[in-house]
Length: 189
Image (cartoon, rainbow, N blue to C red; front, top):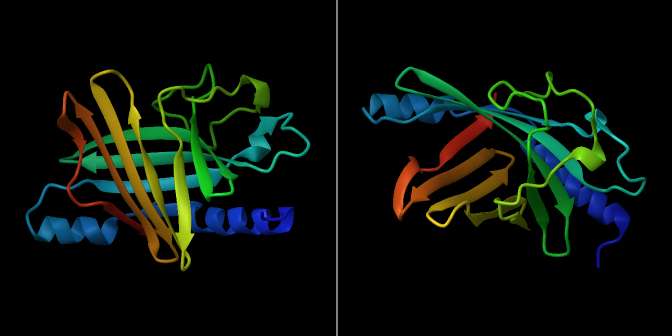
């Protein structure tokens, strides 16, 4: 069993890897040269505990706003999320939360986030929490979520000092409607 200091340092190590501004510029340029359709993607990941009021006194988790931006064939779209990362016996657990009531899901960012009561945050009922396990400084994990009886979301990620490797796909009736064969390779911008 890890003591609080070890727990904290493990979670802190993990958070250092995933917070900041990342993009897949190198990978995108390689794909362009190869004539392949692939998104230019950015992640802006910011811990947001400072914007959550009345966290429990002994609260050990880290809430994070993930601002994801994708551009494919000149079309851009944003996909913001709020995640909670907690240290568990098996590794680091990612739970997804709903964007706070009243916030615009299309333009939500850390900067636009208004202070919100901890008790008002709602855990996503559709998303299956993802567990990340560390091996030689590399954290790897993911989950499969059944959003509806016919819609399945798969997430697999690897985080290290060199960057973030993210594979996401959405299937409807067994056919992929979102995602790519090759994971998106983000490097710190």
